Image (tube, rainbow, N blue to C red; front, side, top):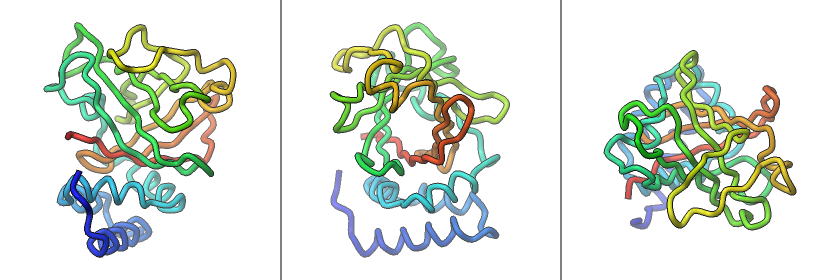
Length: 210
């Protein structure tokens, strides 16, 4: 990935955060900013967003354009082909992470009913990979990332599937469901919930097409 000009990043970050904070600025303006940015700049911006901005972004794009599973794993990707979404969460530590998704075999590539995925981060050997099944929420036109469900298979090279309800994984992923909302073509914003209650933890992701 090409190096990012720090001055250009600072300018984009300032404009983006100002529009998130401006109640009169439409969500579509944020989408345009991100769609016009180069891939490396999107990653750098996403990984620069603080908790306040992520929380504001999550609220701002509620009811914006629909997000579906095919936005996370495009139809032109092969079965069990890994699609990386590079992100930043609002936890106190180990904030840089990825959600990695794939489409399972023998499904409609344009309208899959589920995706498999896991969380890639430096503490995975301790916390577990955090496997999940992602599904469309047709009522809200958003995507749910359900850690209560585990996929039955995964791509070669992914870690072994482990329960999210045992050991340290229970405290990190146990009984959790993340909700993902569209920000732009590549970028999503999510919030974590446990037992139906939002935890006040957010994360921003951008799909890596390289």
